[in-house]
Structures are given as C-alpha cells and as structure tokens.
Image (cartoon, rainbow, N blue to C red; front, side, top):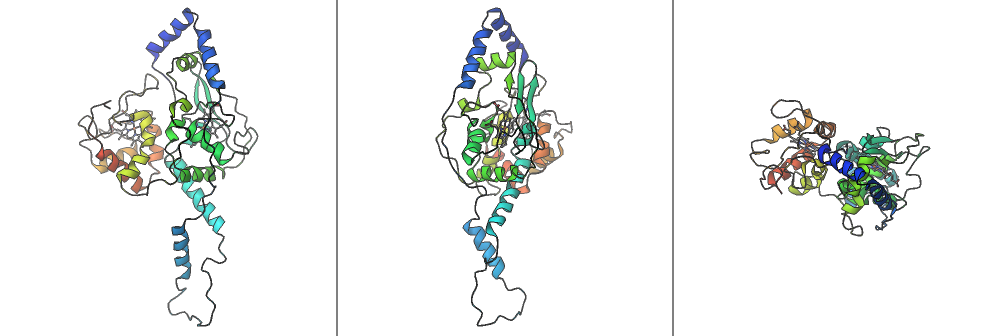
Length: 346
Ligand code: HEC
Ligand code: HEC
C-alpha cells in the first residue's frame, strides 16, 4: 500500500519548516524517535502448531473406519492405535503451511511490500516521501529474518518493532488483531519460500516524510499500538458466516475505509486516490446492495455502477478473489450488522 499524501497543506508545512529553519529540528526529532528502543512482550508459540485434539480425533476416526465392507477382522488381532505409523508432525506442518498460504494470498499482503518472492520490495519510493523498502525475508544473503524466533516475528508483525527494538516503518497496526495461530501459520508458509540473495538498503525518509513524521502525520505503528504486553487471541474466531468472524476479517479494510468503515478520504494517500466507499448499510453506502452485488464487485473489480474500480481498491481485488465463500459471506454479515452512518461518520 502506498503511503503518500495530501500535498497542499503539506507542501506549505515543508515550506514553513525550511523557511523557519525548523527542518533541522524535524530531522533531529525524527532521528531520535527512530533510534529509541521500545519494550514489548516476548512470547513463544510453536511453528507449526501441533494438531488439535479435534484434528487427532478426526484422523483416528478416518483411520479406524473399516477398509472395505465385509473385510475379515480377525478376532484375536491386538487393538492397535489407529494413529500408529503416521507422521503427525509432518501432517501438522503441511496443514499449517496450507493455512498460512491462504492467509497471505487472501488477507495479509506481506508480498505486496516484501516482493512476490519475499526477497525484497517497495512500499514507497518517492523523492519527497522517502524510500520505504520491504527487506528480504528469505534465508538468502541479505536476510533480515535469519535466526528469528517466534517472539521476533510477533514483535515486527503485531508490535511494529524491529529485532533490535527500534520502531519499524511498517504498518503493523493492520496486523494487531492477528491471532497466534494465524501468525504461526503465516511463518510456516513464509519459510517455504526459497532462499534468494538480495541485500535491501535500510529505509530512509525524504524531506516531506521527515516533516510529516515530526508533525505526527506519519505515525509509527509502535506508537499507535497502545498495549505491548497484552496477550493476543490464541485462535481466530471459528470460520462461519458470523458477525464475529466477519469482524475479524474486516480489520484489513479499516486502513482505507476507516475504523467505522463509513469511508471518506483515505488519511495517508496521494491526491489522486478517490475517497473510500461507505461500507455501512446507509443510503450513501451499501443500503441497496445484495450479497450478490457485493460478491461480484469484490471479485470482478468492477464497481456496482459498472465503472472500472479505481486504485487503490484495485489492489484488494486479487486478494478478494482468493477468499473462501464463507469469508466473503462473513464480511457481508458483519457489514450488514453495522449501524448505518453517513460517509465519514464515526
Ligand atoms: C505496506 C508494506 C508492508 C507490508 C504489507 C508488510 N511489510 Fe514487513 N516491512 C515493511 C517495511 C517498509 C519494512 C522495513 C522497516 C524499517 O526498516 O523500518 C518491513 C520490515 C519487516 C521485517 C524485518 C524486521 C527487522 O527486524 O528488521 C519483517 C520480518 C517483516 N517486515 C515481516 C512482514 C510480514 C510477515 C508481513 C505480512 C504479515 C509484512 N512484513 C507485511 C513493509 C511491509
Ligand atoms: C488500500 C485501500 C483499500 C482497502 C485496503 C480496501 N478498500 Fe475498498 N475501496 C477503496 C477505495 C479508494 C474505494 C473507492 C473506489 C472507487 O471509487 O472506484 C473502495 C471501494 C470499495 C467498495 C465499493 C465499490 C463500488 O462499487 O462503489 C466496496 C464494496 C469495498 N471497497 C469493499 C472493501 C472491503 C470489504 C475491503 C476489505 C476486505 C476493502 N474494500 C479494502 C480502498 C480500499
């Protein structure tokens, strides 16, 4: 997702800052904030998560079903554990990788900034804003995740902290609601990417980025996230067409459609981005929509009025296409449960 800006007011601020000789102050203030270290809990969760009791029970049942109708069962054969001979660790890993793949392809867009091959990518590359680069997350040369423990992954993804404890310029606030299981599954999937050598230079802020950060208009995730000691949910809500599961999924829509999902101008976007649509059941929002309208718009990338969808919503479509029907239904169920609000309402 590109982090750019509303130019008018901001250019003015840059001008005032340079005229007033305050730019030096801004640089220093930001450098100080970026070199400060922060505390967050250090938790340990296995990667992959072991099979649950329910999964084991299902496997046992599958394996003890008679091989074929009428097969002779010898009365004196010793009862054997139906799970004997199964590599449970390998099954757990395979399932975790599959779940993680789905999460990364349908919801959590790590590759958008870290590259399709995960070896490095671009979040923002603009002379004024700066170069915010997604580092190499594979095991090749230039890897920023070599030797990462679960705690290190937790700290960058859900707390906005780099391994050395300083603030990362990564929008981790989008991921704070991720459960332990989801993060563990994502790590299991990311670890399947082949090692690629690529040394990504450290991110730097340009003059505009520096002034915005100094003015607090480019908040650091670590400062945004209030409680760095609180436990995360261990499990995501059950996959169902429910308000609860839908509420978990729409976290990824709030960065653009707002906390209330009533839409309006996207806070940190370039001037040519249209306002995000109102997703509440208000007449200025989705009041007249059916689930079929919603599903089609999300998957076909065409607006309900037939016009082509504009950026940056177009970025969401390749992810929405990968959503399971139950996920799309749950999002819809959640959106229908919202209080109707006018555009931008809270
Ligand atoms: C919107 C862009 C964006 C997305 C999406 C994103 N990242 Fe990042 N990530 C970055 C940037 C930029 C940095 C470099 C931050 C810095 O140097 O301050 C980074 C840094 C990292 C690091 C290195 C931390 C360190 O200690 O140096 C890891 C690991 C990481 N991201 C993992 C992830 C994972 C996992 C996901 C998906 C769940 C993800 N990122 C999604 C932009 C992104
Ligand atoms: C990167 C920012 C961004 C994210 C993330 C995002 N949207 Fe959007 N969305 C927009 C913008 C901007 C528009 C207006 C596009 C236009 O006018 O063509 C929009 C429009 C829409 C529309 C209305 C389309 C129409 O026909 O008018 C729907 C529905 C929608 N988004 C749903 C979602 C849902 C659900 C999510 C989360 C899964 C989501 N969006 C995530 C930016 C975003």
